[in-house]
Length: 133
Image (cartoon, rainbow, N blue to C red; front, side, top):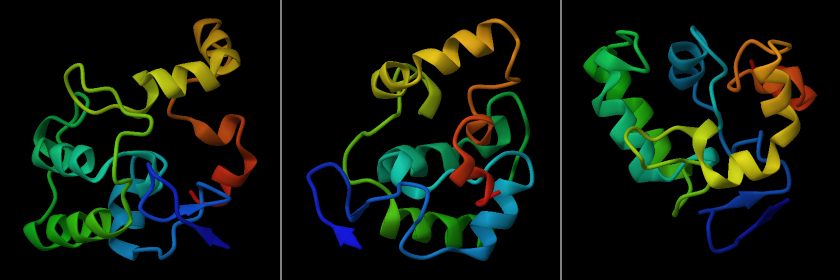
């Protein structure tokens, strides 16, 4: 079921389910980490990240131009229309935004204790995310 609301282009009852999947996004982004659903960041944030793939959180994750364009088009169509989880301190980051922190205090404690390897390891707590990896 699709509903429309202010901060999502097309919000879903389950954030993990995009209206449409994209094999290039799933393959390229999912090669190193969970392929985060496009609705987790605003379109502009995704596009900003794509311009910095040579320095993607400390890793050179440069994409072929065709793959980059396809992923950008996917994010333009399915990304959030305004900021959701991201932080604009420096680089858009899902795990440092106020909304993420407010909703994930338990995960922050587990991460600080070393019980989960990364705040980006959504599947550690969200079992529906595991099915998307």
